[in-house]
Amino acid sequence: MLGFFYFNKDAPFENLRKFSSLWLKENEYYEDHYDFMDNKFYFAIQEGAETPEEVRREIEEKLEEEKENPSFLHSAYLTAKWVLKDTVLANKIFRYFEDLPEDNYKISAYITYLKDKGIDKVTSYLKEKKIDYFIKDFRYYAYLKFFYPVPEIHKAIEYIKERKKEGFVWLPEIGSLIRILFNRKEWDKVKMLIEMEKEIVNDPIKFRKHSAFSRFPPRTNNILEALKEMKNGLYSVLAGFYLRTNKLDSSYFYVKKIVEGKRFEEIDPGILGLFAKSAWKNKKTEKAVKAYSYLVYYYGHTEYEDTLKSILGKDYEEKIDKIKKEIMSKLKKVSDFELTLIDGSKFKYEENKGKIVVLNFWATWCGPCKAEIPELNELVEKFKESKDVIFLAITDEDKEPVQNFLKKQKFLYKLAINGRELGREFKVNAFPTHFIVDKKGRIVFKQIGYLKGTGERLKDKIEELLKINQ
Image 1 (tube, rainbow, N blue to C red):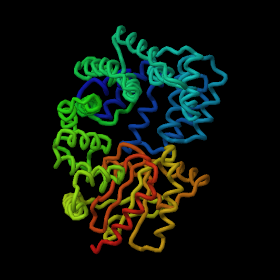
Image 2 (image 1 turned 135 degrees about the horizontal axis):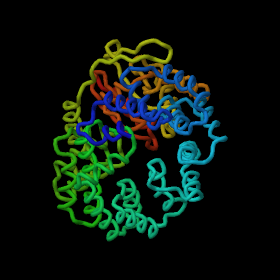
Image 3 (image 1 turned 135 degrees about the vertical axis):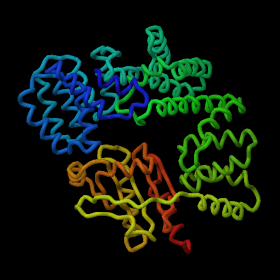
């Protein structure tokens, strides 16, 4: 795929139009070839060149003509699933595969279908079919067969060693095994895998191989940023490893590399927690207190409050009030934004200044997002009499999937659609992510991912803000 490898090879690789043009050029040479059509449609929608409705229509018009072409069916199915998020269209396309002979396209589509049924279904299928792990769609799941239903550590290590001999170990394969070995405290094996990971991250050719093989499109649109992200992942593993093995100087050295130059409210709370522990163990009390304070009072990780109390000791309340005021004084304010709500009306932040705005970035396909909705509905009910609190849920999706979702699940937040740009502005990298904007427009709370007691955590912060005389 000329277009695909252009996108991954030439740094910086932010020119999506060039990717699309190369994809179209390649199709001139191979008329029945539709590989990566899903990526082409993804970029077209991102750039506003086509609407989801136009893409849907293109696929449906071509479906009868190409119903025996596995390349078309495969990319059309992926487009319906992950670009359009249209389950009805995806199921319609999937049924055409039933009459076709089994090949890699059909197997790939079937794996995508099984993802919704659970990882155990995928791994069972991989074992049954003895699938070629060098095929991208399958490699992503192939190594998981060593971890489900019971971890087979020896086999997983042998698998990774074999891949190394062949010249390509994939970072997620190493990472999954490191996490298990961490919990088992098998430090010699962890150290061996860390060395492998270092080798990949520090070798430009091996890193390019990893980058080309990784999930598409990448989270960042610049190869240098992607490399930095990978290195930070390695540094976090090293920092955790050295902290657990009591090599405290080394632990602090690596975690400091990740957080240097960043505002604490922009650091992933998992990394910030690692920094706080490492700083405290290395007797860097001021840095530890600051990190723990952000974890408790900005990210809502109240499990660190006892540690913070033990560090601050006497006159805790007085000290923590001073720290909280300092945190509040440094928080960024949100810029004005405008969103389209599902009923077609507009939400304009400018018209709601002076109120507490609770934001939830979510998706209809996101399991943890769906799991927390009952808690969020209770939250809306609790504050329904308050004119000073607004609850707003933002999805990247368009109107149709959200409407279909609401037929099965009630969601009491105001629902905004096509909110991708705002997600970028807020640097949202995972769903769900929650923010609370106070009456002065400051982002005073952030939670990444689903945590037990999310509703209670949000409630406590809202009540605290309502008590403050701003």
